[in-house]
Structures are given as structure tokens and as C-alpha cells.
Amino acid sequence: MATLYFKLNPHLYLRDPQQTELGQKIINASVVLIDTLGFEQFTFKKLAEEIDSTEASIYRYFENKHRLLLYLVGWYWNWIEYQIDMRTSNLPSPQEKLKACIQVLASEKKFDASFDFIDEVALHRIVIAELDKTYLTKQVDSDNKEGLFGGFKLLGKKISSWVIEMNPTFPYPDALVSTVLLAAKQQLFFAAHLPSLTNLGKGVSQQHMALENFLQLLLFKSITDTHA
Image (tube, rainbow, N blue to C red):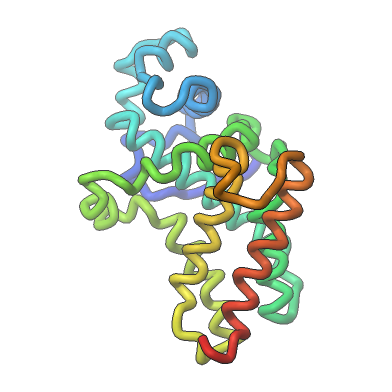
């Protein structure tokens, strides 16, 4: 069982999968299948076969596969915020907090033993590949009214507060932070599939180092630019 628990928006699920053995099996297997097959080819029928259960049992937890994807991405942003909180809790200045934040965003992801029902490395790959599918939809406005993007938005507000603390006159803190958060995923996607759109290079360690340098430059040059 997981030693830690994230309280996600209850509109994301019909029954909280973190609270039951079957629910955790659903989360674990869905991460594996979406990572392997891609979201388009992923179905509840395939998921049911993977966990030796029924589609009906999965529908007791999630309304549809899009809600399941929203749940996984929401869980991921809560996990990233948890890591950032751990790294920044004793740092005195907003500059140090922002640097630590970039390090978390850009780092190569490792398995977190605090949550034994989910593979964070595979989930990270899913977020890189499938993030846009959570909000580039016809129902984005209704999903937003239900608070389904709350994890991403709350994390953005936390980081924006440090930007404002560092430079209270900077006019675009929310825009800058959302750009940084998305760039942290998009640049890795480009490096893997559309390399002419990025400068991260080919080696994994080199890519993450280059990504950290790029995000630091993007963030701090924007905040400190006197013409901003």
C-alpha cells in the first residue's frame, strides 16, 4: 500500500482508486498500457484483460478513459508539487526556490517508493506524450469549471508567487510559469520525435541538463529583463 496519499478533485473519479486494491491495480496497469500503446489505442477492455477483471469494474472508478487520463495527469502534478515542496521548504529566497523548482521539472524521473502502485517514470513519459490531450478538447471549459485542471493550476500559482516575490513589477508571472511548465514536457517530446525543434541533444543526461539550463535562462532572463 502507498505510504502517502494525494487528495485529488473528486470529479476526476467515481470512486477513489487510491483507496482500494483494485483501484490501485487499475492505476498501475493503465499507466503501463497507455505508456506502451498510446492513449488512442488504450481501451477499458484492454485494461480489464490486463488486470483480469471486467470493464464494468473499471467504470465503477472512472466515467471514461479521458477522465482516467485527467486523473493520471492530475496525480502527476500533485507528485511534482510534492517534490518541489520537499526541495524548497528550507530555502530562504524566491530565487533559490525557483532554481530548485526548475531542477525538479527538468530532472530525469525516478521511481518513488512512497507510492508503490504507480510507475512515475512511465507516468512521466505519458505526460510528455499525452498532456495536450487533456485540455485540447471540446469539453475543456466544462472540465475547467469542474476543477479538473486544479493540480496544474495550483502548482502554477505556487511558482508564480515566487516570481512575483522576486520581481513584483513583472507583468506576466502566470503566463511565464505556464510556459515553463509546458516547455519542460514539450522540449523532451521534441528531442525524442521532432529534434529539429529543439537544442537538447541526443543523450538522456545531456538532454535533462540542457533542459534545466534552458528553463533557467527562460525563467530568470524574463523576470530580470528591465524591459519586461
